[in-house]
Each structure stands twice: as structure tokens, then as C-alpha cells.
Image (cartoon, rainbow, N blue to C red):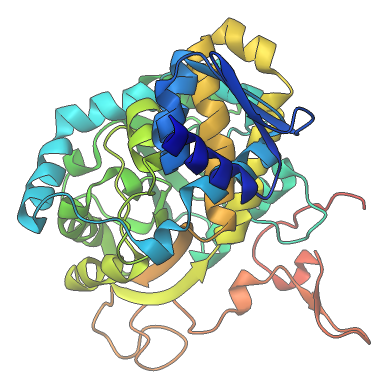
Length: 439
């Protein structure tokens, strides 16, 4: 125990926030610390000393330890204990061929449906506690620093629509459409024919209710369907996949992009928005954090570095046009979600369970911390299926609708003495203006 106590003291001395650590028969640290960790058994002491954050988080969910303190302080302590997984890397536990076989096995259709249901069919009411009113469950876009979560999510939806150059009458496919935010926004603001698919029964039912409530039946449809089941002869002018490809599996990315390319009309555009690993050698978060998320939040989720996404995209015949990193936007989004959940913990426990609430408290705040520190990243990849005709597009050789500039992505620009700044004058744009919160 003396060796373990020495390790614990060393850990406590190097934390960015003071911590009070309690266990049966002992205590260490500052009694007035902003973070308290109360262990109900001795075993987690060794996990603390070794920085095994995933094991400590799992013990918290089981009720074997309690955590007190603001989540920002708790995560500052957790980050210090875990170390930097990007710089350190995560040693591959099995040969590459085994990992690829496991990825294919994990992402069979029936298993994918069960894994999606585990997360997204948890409880619509629970997710509604901390998501924005449109229930957009992906990275928001804080075009203006003063935006609140709802405004930033609308800005994100509009950002995607602008990137895709949506026009009235176009056929848009949303793969993994969630609670329908993009479908409804694109139909109401851009006049497209929008089709969405999901493996979540709860989301499927919710979106169909929204379609009827908004009078969009005939212009928007939502199917309970695996993306691999979409018929090859179905053709779309534009395709979006928002926060879905993390569930595809690294071994299936080639077929995923190939299927998308086959569904996209020549000259059409596709936008893939998804989480990627922060480093080349950490396919999951280190210190057991990835295992915790796989067990309690997203079973079957896999992360690859952005550089490993591009080869299968290119092999499918798609041409990458634009790559945008939204990493700090996702950190802020997650902190908004975390704060909203923290404000309604009692209600969350009534809707779900103590174990679920504990898991999501750590998941949301821990993910926010991971995006802030660059351990996770988030990319929007815009690509085209070239039509082979040199005369297509505004520039000779474009071979697609993409203008090969970024003017369509800007809501409007004004000049001032201080230089360029964003405004919300929609006169120069195809889509609607997005509001900004008052300072």
C-alpha cells in the first residue's frame, strides 16, 4: 500500500485542479478541493494511480464510486490523469487483419441495427432534455461567437445546404437522418425533395410525425432502412451523411463510399460530416475512454484518422472538393449539451435511470474535453461524382456543380475599418439568413 500511496500522492501533486480522494479507511488531497472522488472499495485506487480513466468511469456508472464537482473541473482532472492519447498513441492489441475482420463482423446489418437502437432508441424525452428544439444531434456551427445552441444548429444546417448548392426540386438523400433536422430545413428553406433513412425506430416515428405536422408529406419522406438496402437505381442530386459514418466500420468504408457514389447522379455533390481520430495511432481514445464509450454509449463505433478516410473516398470515384475541420465547434456544442443535462439531472433520472445519467454525464463532458484538446476531430468532406463532361459547371473541366470557390458558403460579407466580418444579409445568397443572439 505504501507504493500505491506514493503513486497517488504523485498524481495529486500534478493535477491542474486540487482533488480530494477518499476510500474506505483513508483519504488524500485537499478537503476543500473543487473535485471529490469517493471510492466505495480499494480496487479503484490502483486505477487512479495508473490513470485508467475508463475503469474509473465504469465504476462511477456502476455506483462503486461517486464524483462531486463541476464537470469542467472534473474533466480537467480526468485529462491530466489520462495523458495525451494522440501524442502517446494507443498500441494495437491485435494484428491488423484481425482488426479488419472484427470490424466487418461488428458491422453486419442486423448487428448495426441493434447497435443503433441501443443508443438512439434510449428515450426521445431524454435526448430532448439537452438537445436544441430541432433535436440536431451533431456538431453545431458557431458562425458568430454570440450564437446560442439553437442558432448554431440552424447555422450548421444552412452551412450544409449552401455547401451542397441545394436548389428547388433537387432530390436530397440524408443517410442517418436522426430526428430530421436537415430534412425539414432543406425542404422548408430550399424547396428540395428530401428523403431520409435511419435504423432507429424512435427517430423514424418522430420524423414522420413532424412531416405530417408541418404539412410536408409528399415533399419529405423518412424510411426505416439500412443504407446498404437503398436500391442501386435510386439516383439523387445531392447526398448528406451527418454524424453517421462513425457507425460504418473502418473495414466497410470502401463499400460505404462506393454505394454513395452509385446513388449520386453524375455531377452531383455529397457531404460527409463525421468524427475522426485526433492522431494516426489512436483508433480510439486512450486510458480506456474508448472502451467506456463502446460499452455504455456507442457500441460498434469506430474512429479513423482523416488521412485514412480519403483513400476509400477516392477509390469510389468521388472527387474531394473541400475539407473543413469543425473540431472546436464540436467542443462548444458538447459543453452546451453537458450544461443542459447538468441542469436537469433529476428529470433525467426519472426518464431513464441513474446508470444512464451517470454514463451520459461523463460521455458528454469527456467528449467536449477530448475535442478541445485535439484528441478527437470533426470533418466535413464535400465531394463530387464527376460527370466526365468538360463543359459542365461554371469553369471548364469542373465536371460537377461545384463552383471551385467558397463564395456559396458565406452568408454575406461586409467590409469595415477593422477588416472583413460576417453579416447576415441574405441578398447575396440562395438560402435564408440565420439569426444571431444579442451580446
